Amino acid sequence: MVSIRFIVLIFGGQKQIALQNAALRQQLSVFKRDVKRPKLNDRDRLFWTTRLLKGGSKSKIHKIQGRNLIKQRRIQVKGRLNSVVVAVAVIGILCLIQMLVSAQGRGGRANPPNMTGPAPLLPNGKPSMSGVWGQIRRADVTDSKIPGYVKELPFTDWGKKQWDNYDAAKGDYAGTCLPFGISRTIYGPHPIQIIQDNDNLVFLAEQNTWFHIVSTDGRQFDKDLPSSWFGESIGHWEGDKMVIETKNMNGYVKVDTIGHPFSNQARIIQTFRRVDYGHAEHTYTVDDPKTYTRPWTITETWTLKPDVKIMEYSCEEGNHDLFNGHIKAWRPPEDEDAPR
Image (cartoon, rainbow, N blue to C red; front, top):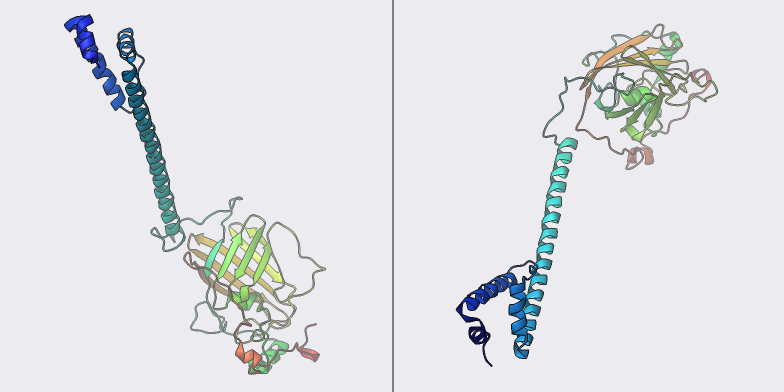
């Protein structure tokens, strides 16, 4: 078969050969690149028309074009896959960075909070008591080794009798896994979390997984509500100080672990003033005219525990002393000791 170059040499001369060679190099470079072929000019169309006049060349050109199209599409698909892989990798890295930053913010705290920084505020502009707090453990409110203690409790005759006759070995309600009440929960060994908004303050106690809701929306006490272990609590603001009054307790609860008494006439008044991010001034006042001749108050400072998480607590689980009878079951007091 006569070659294309020989035919061109016969009909076109050296100048035409140079032009056709340039066109051929251009087309070969197009086939080698991973882009669509540019539109052909008139000279290129003439060149390829001349080649296509030969049947064998036509078949060869089709094969070359087919192979190059397949190669081009493979490269395009590979390029798109590479782009997808890169995009997924970038998204994964960004998510990992976000997780690490969030983890540092929750626990371990690469940047611990400034405990002396400003106190957080509620939407209404008042200081928020929200957070997990390490309150002071008081098994005995008269223990002189614990700052803020009460030097001597001013018992009435009835109150002194309750104190003198108390013996936990004869049955204590807490040992029987009944509710501890607000006083023994606040002064217990486990942390308390407070959640607060404009209308409510909620105590979440690790102790037996109990909770206590304090309404702060201006409502009054519910006169029809039955007495209970924790009583009913209502809060109000005095400047930047939250004042919480608790009453309508059932008269069975004790002030502390050692057993200082309450009656069902008792009122507990607590105040909270968050002085900065990590500290709050707390006062606890008992006003119980049946048990004490005058109110008495404990003043102390609570410390925020930003890295502490309250846990589930089950009094009954594994309580072998209770199940085996080593702890005597509690019975409500009767006769003159019964709440009235």
